[in-house]
Image (cartoon, rainbow, N blue to C red; front, side):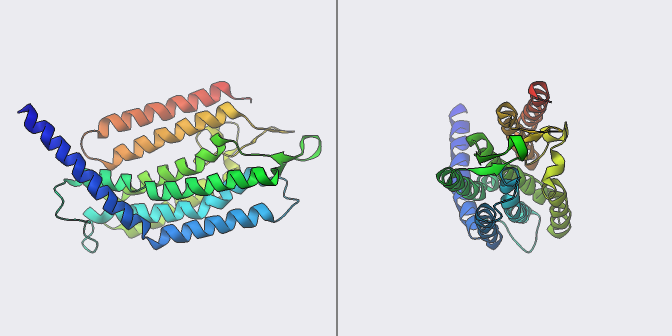
Length: 276
C-alpha cells in the first residue's frame, strides 16, 4: 500500500512538472507579458536617462518602471487561473492525469516567466546604474548624486510580480467570468501602486505592495536596509498566502497559515526596527 502511494505521488509530481512546462510556454506566449516587459524597459531607460534635475529619481524610478508589468502579469495570471471555470478557454493538456489543484500548482509554477523577466531587467538595471555612477537623491545638505539601489531593493520588483501573479491565479480560479475581476483588480492595483509615494507614511510603508526608499522624515531622507530586508520577507509571506488561496486542498491550509504568519511577523518587525 505504501509503495502504491509513493508511486502515485511520484507520478503526480511528474505530471505537474510536465504541465508546468506547458503552462510556462503558454505564459511566455502571452502578448500582455511582452507588452508589459517592453513598456517596463522603455520606462526604465527613459526615466534613468532623462530629467537630470529629478530630485526623487532614486525613489520613484523602480516603482514607476515596473507599474506596466504589474498590470500585464495580473491579466495573464487571472486568465490562466480561470481556465477551469471558463467554457471558452479549456485547460491546457486536458488529458493530463491531474485534478484542479494539480493544474493550479502548474499555473503557479508558470509565474516563473514574468518573475524571471523582471528579475533579469532588475539585474541589468542594477549593473547599468552602478556603471553610470548612481542617481540623484534628496535636496540641500542631504543631496547626493551617487545613490544606488541595493540587492534587497532590487529583489522587491520580482517579489511584487510574484505576489500579483499568485493573487491573479487565485482570483481567476475563484470566479466564473474573468472580465469583472480583471477590471476591479486593475483598479485596485492602480490605487495600490499608482500613487506609490502615499505609502511612504509613518506606518503604511510596512504593508505597501511596493515599498519605496528612502523613508521620508520631516526634514530629510533615510534609507533603512533592515526595513527593506523585512519588507522582502513580508512579500514572500504574501506569495505563500495567495498561493494557498489558489488551492482547494492540501497544502492550502499550511500555505495560508505560513503566509499570514510570515507577513504579520515581518510587519511587526518593520515597526520594531523603524527609524521613525
